[in-house]
Length: 160
Image (tube, rainbow, N blue to C red; front, side, top):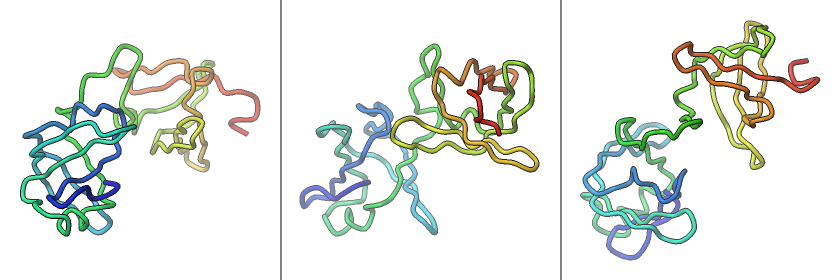
């Protein structure tokens, strides 16, 4: 949540994927902050400019209550996510997948994803090493969900 909006407890939420169909009335979400979190029901939600959604939460009725929630991450339940389209995936799905090169050489296991601005990056850990793998079509050649593995074609120097 990026800011309180107005006097009646509305919040501006930056959506990961606008228009954020998962942020809908009557949905249960988790508000997570350092040191804890809580669940809340969405009372109302509406698009608000570039990548933002105005959200009203049940029980949050004034600006002071809304301001107390600014900085919280809004997490939706897996079952409330829209299905991924062909060739798409959610990052939570690949955590724990093993990564190997197109030649079959093991690289490690995906432990996290982070954004760099230009593209996202997977953190891939092996016993003694950590690799940062760009999540771009030129590198990621395939995702085998049933086999829980990702195949990459690393450019020269990526795994050195």
